[in-house]
Length: 355
Ligand code: COI
Image (cartoon, rainbow, N blue to C red; front, side, top):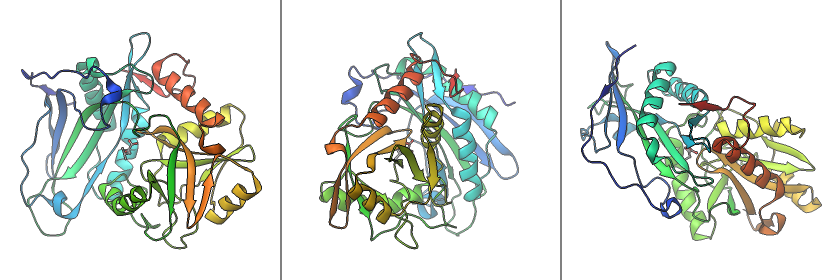
């Protein structure tokens, strides 16, 4: 195991007084972790130092060709004062799955978990304790060659930065309005859809702007070939409660294998719900809406946690879910997951890792 170098900072920042006023992803803690990769040396120089801007060549390969991946996870301070991280190994293993898709060198998951825990321990005073708030952890890897040739890079940088956050959507835990996107596509099977890579988010930006102009928070993507089967929202996976069952699109290769999605399905099964991971077409969803069997729609994600959907727009069909109000299952799931995270509910699943 390599030793992690720690460089003490003299520039410690003020912590926020009211976390609910901090816009998601705009404030960062005092320290960050980084290490470099060189083709013949592997991952080297693991360091924790002051969070600061980094020097970048104008010909940095990520800026031009986007060979990069990231993760999003969260740290909590429980009611007993323990510092915990939610499902860290699931996240780091998924980072390695994304790495394989983009030909990025994999990380040593155990080493990075230890580095992450060390960073979170140093920064534990940055963890907000309000319900639904946490210290968001953003590990990422980008190619770091100074080279305009289109090829897999020889050098990479891995970093972890930390950001205290509350609700992802400015409305807090309130139903969001989602527009079903039938023109643009996010990903196709065989492409990058299941990797957590900037390209998927870049592909979603324009559709997001159009949706915002129409008064919607996000778009719901349909499959890129038939424009028929429901995929994901981009910032979160999507789940439905239909006739008492929890239904969500199966992992097709073009959607993200969400850790919160998996968490919801495991908890729902333990509560006795029937869970279906399958293809679900937008026509079937409209039919379920019309015949009254579509009871709830909600998103799941690390940043979003559980986000109830109050309205779906598909072409000119407006579907108002549960009168646009927060519905029972979503609320129960949100409360249960946040209680596990805050340590007020016993974790029988092994989701919570103590730092
Ligand atoms: C996360 O939920 O961690 C994500 O990466 C989504 C991002 C849009 C904030």
